[in-house]
Length: 371
Image (cartoon, rainbow, N blue to C red; front, side, top):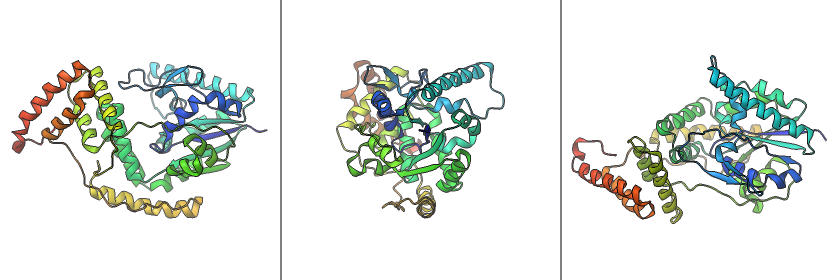
C-alpha cells in the first residue's frame, strides 16, 4: 500500500488544538490502526507564560506547543538573513523531523498526519515546495476546517489573550483579518492547492466534526476518509466573555509577574467553567463585522460550487456591539468575581488594584478608563 500524508493546515480556531490533543492522547491506538501522529520532543515556546500539558495513554507528558507540527514548517520559513543561533535551531528542528518521517516510512503505518493550524494563513511566508520534498512518493491529502471569519477572529483574539502573547494579540488577529479580506477563503485555498498539489482536498465546517454521533477525532477521520474505530472526548478551553478578555488584555499592559498573571487566568477559567457564556459583543467594529460577513457570503458560493461544501446555516451574522475597552468600575467588578478563585498572594495584589480602579472611576470624565 502506498504511504499517505494528510496535511491538516487549520484554519485556526476550528478545533485544531483539540484534534491535536486527541491525536497525542490516543497516538498508540492510532498506530495500531495504521495512523502515525508524530510528536515533536522539543518545546516550541520554552519561555511561554501560560503553559498547558497533555498526557498520552502511557503516561508521557507533552507541552501543548509540542503537539502541533508548526516546528516542521518553521524550518522552511522565508528568512532572508537568519542569525547563527536561529539557523542552528532550525537545522535541529529539521533533523528531528527527518528522523520522525523516516520512522513512518520504515514502519507499518499507512498514513501520517501533519497538523499545524497557522499554515492556513501563513503558508505564503514559507518555502512549502522544499518541505513537500520530505514526503516524496506519498499520496497527499489537504485537509482544513472552516467557520465564519468573525467567529474565528473573535475566538483567536480571546484565546490569544488567555495564552498571553503580550502586546502581539491585536496585531495577530488583525493580520489574519487583513489576509482574509484580501481575497477571502477562496484565494487562500486556491493558493494552498496550487502549492501542495494534493491528490485529494478535504474541506469541512468545524461543526461537522460532531456529526453522526462523532466526537472531534472520529469526526475528523470520517470527514477525510480514513477508517478508524477510535473516538475521543472533546477537550476545549472555555472562552470568557468580552469584558473579561479585555480585563486580561489591559492587565498584560501593567508590570505584573508571570506567576500572578497565570493565577489570574486560572481564576478566570475556574469561574467561567461554572457558567454558560453567550456572546453579546465583539472585539471588532460593526463595519468590520459587516465586511467579514459580506466576504464570507462570496466564499460560501465558491466553496459550494468549487469544492462541493454544503452551505452553512449562518452566512450573514448581524453585527454585535463593539466593545473597545472596560471602564475602571467594570474591571473592579471582574476582580471582585475572581477573588475567591485566586491564591492569597494574587488576591492581595488584585485587591490593591481594585482600590486603585475605584479611585480612578471618579476621574473617568477626563480619562479613557481601563487599567
